[in-house]
Structures are given as C-alpha cells and as structure tokens.
Image (cartoon, rainbow, N blue to C red; front, side):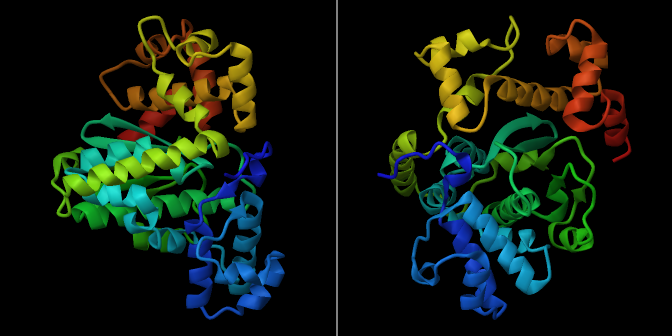
Length: 344
C-alpha cells in the first residue's frame, strides 16, 4: 500500500489521466522519447499499463505535450477520451445503473476515486440538475484550466453515451473569461458560457429518470463492491475526510454545522480534524465557504426569493455582508448574477 504523502503536489493521480495524455501524443505522432525528455520523465513510463505520476509530474507531461503541439486547447480533447468506460470500477457501476439518477448519485459518491484534485457536488434546481466543480487546492498551470475543461468534456461525452443527450439538454459554465480557443470548445460542447460565478455542468432534470440501456443489477452490485474496496484503500492513501466533511456541510435550522459539530459526528477531536484536513490540502473555513457559495447560487436561481431572504437563509443578518461574500466568491454581486441569468 502506498503511504500518503503530506504534500498534495506529490499525491499520485489516477493512471487514466497520464494514459489519456500519452494516447493523445501518440495519435498526433509526437516523438515520445523527446516528449519524455521535455517532461523530465523516464521513458519506461511509456510501457506501463498503469503509470503512476504525481500531480506535478502530470503538469510537466501536459506542458510537454502543449510545447510540442504549440496548442493549449487540448483539455476538451483529453476529456472526450474519458467516457464512463475509462473510469474503471466506477465507470462499470455507471453503465450498469438503472437510471441516470442512480448513475449520477454513484458518480458523486465515488468521485474521490478519480477526481482527487477536483471536487464535485450535486444539486437539483428545476428544470435543471447541477454538478458543481471546485479545485480542492490551487492547481499549477496549465492544469488549472485543463482540469475543468477535460472534466466538463468527460461529463458531456458520458451523458451522450448514457442517455443520448443532445446539445440543448446540457449547459456548461466556466468562471474564467473565454480563452482564445473558445470557438473550438463551443463547437464541440455546445451551450458553453464564460464569466459565470461557478464551474458547473448543468443538464435537463427530465433526464434523471431515463432508463439506461445496459442496466445490470448483478454487475452493478459487483462494481459498487469494488468501488468500496478502492475507497477503503484511499483511507490511507488519498483524500477521504474532506469528502465526509462536505457531506456534513448542510444548512439546517441552526445554520451550518460548526467545527465542533462535525468533529463530534466524525468521532474525532477538533484538533485532529483540523490536522487531517490540512494534510488533505484544505481547511474547515474553505469547505464552509464552498458550501455557502454553492447554496447561494442555488437559492439565487429561484427568482421567487428576494436577495434579502437568500441572505437570511444562509445565515447573514446583514444583506450587505452577503453581497460582499458573494462578490468575493464569484466576482459578481447577487443582483448582477441574477441579471446575467435573466438575460440567458
């Protein structure tokens, strides 16, 4: 068993990501030996079935591919190479699910097996369902934009395969400004919007109950068991605690749970919880802010709620404090965000 490294930059990334970059390089007939030299990686990596790279080594590999191609728009190309079949046991579970709702639930539940640098959360905002993406920690370029673009493209491809989703069934949000290759992304992924308050994959809620053609109860049970075994190993080698804290970070009658509340629920001291979260590259305050931002966007999408009421629901006695916080999270005021959505 691989011992967990304290530095998040040294954490191993799942093999499917370096394999996708290497396959992309082969398809474009790049000199692989020169590519490995540029990335300062051993050529033996090319022969490995399950190459294990650290996050920084993946960065070096991505930079080398970009350097040889002279093109930094490969995020979508990489993501299209990652349909559910590339997700291992989790992918098998998605394919064997009965409905898209069941598949989406499993994807969020076991995402930590794949997206250790990107967190995903799920909410329903009729008539849409929303998958919200966040970096667990600041990623070095070019992974900062490649990770979001590849994940969105992977979800897009997965929805096409699972439920034959159309362009109009899906909408993709990016927080950044349109890159120089925005036309390429929109041509491939359809309804893409930039300068939004969050990175989100949105889809028609009517798809949730759609039956999946490869539903197999026996295969599903087996795949879930395998995911559980993988997750048990991650208790020692990956990021699991932060996912448990996120699951507990739900607004209730008395507001969001405190550090003491969650420590008690997870049967550990507050000191231990703080230390373990720091080892996973985050902290309680960051996770709380993430939950507030997620819930603020969801509530503001309900146009029947006044902004002052949204602030109150999120625990802000003074709406001005909510406005300041929302602007810090998204670069927009709540009213500006609503104006953007009204014009969409």
